[in-house]
Amino acid sequence: MIACHNGVVRGTSRDGKPVSILEIDVDLNKVEMVINEMRSKKGIAAVEAHIFPGIRKVGEDVMLVVVAGDFRENVFKTLEETVNKLKETVVHKKEW
Image (cartoon, rainbow, N blue to C red; front, top):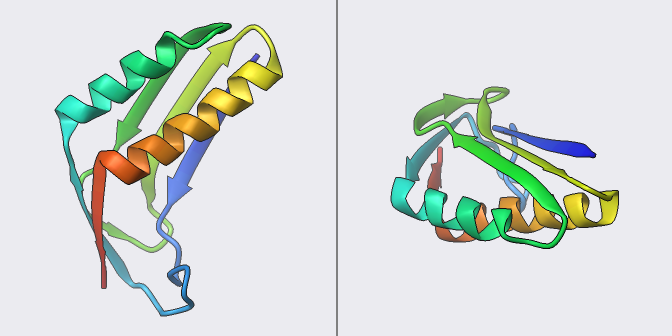
């Protein structure tokens, strides 16, 4: 089972404000720590992630995450946890 997440810059923020540019700063050391932690989860064979740093425009990719494992329950849970953890602890963004 393989699942992926492709995060893109949206034209509006969660609170409904318009967004035209997203500036992204990434802590690469923490990215590796999160990925290694997720790789150790039950039933997970592989986890890969790429975060695009710098200035991103609406519609452009921000984050790609792929998780492979034995059963969808393990893969989907780990994919969601990986994305959330990366967004909370690794990615710092500024919306314009």
